[in-house]
Image (cartoon, rainbow, N blue to C red; front, top):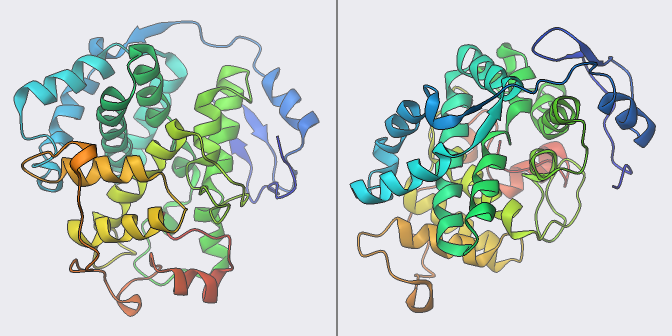
Length: 318
């Protein structure tokens, strides 16, 4: 693992049960990760199948969101996705973190659920191995745990963020990674790697490390994460993209070698009533969708804004 662009902690990081995982001012290194992996004396070994929790009801609720009405327009499709995610086996730590997200910032919780069901659908369509599809969905469920440690005054700010404030957003993949290393005792598990790399791009233009990430499973989480972020209204994004505008943006990213084209085409197909197969998928090069201008957002999704304001490696999506 590359530690060249590693993180210096801005705040103390605590686990849900109160253990200090890493202190303010400490730098993430391989020896530090080894310490974190062995820090928990009694890792949680109690597990619960997702379908036995409240989560299926929450998943069904977000499937009915207006932005996802066309994507999940059939009951059989909704049930197929729910059946897959229902087979996830979650330990107490994951359930506690999800509950914490739900209490602290419902948008983050909702976003996690949306990204999970979208990744589950994509994985079911692309992976013949059901275990691989389940892994993809499971990693999406934990991909944004780092957001739960961003101060609420930043996460829900209605004012334009300062550079220092934006760095909390920029660094949340590292925080989610550290949480999962602590809970699982592994730093190369797919869950930890997705949390760390879900804002990286195939050409190395993403964040927080600016490394090239081409693994399809991670890319599918990335694509669905970006899509939901762009079309969702937040305090700091006064005007979201419309669906066509978000798809235009993702197509540009895929054509530029930043995102997996197969995943983007699947997303295009899902947003059409006819659900065309990939081998017949044709999309317009005209940018007819709505993308909000920079000045109406407190931090935006535009490449020009990120380069001028925050440097090349600070990402365009939250």
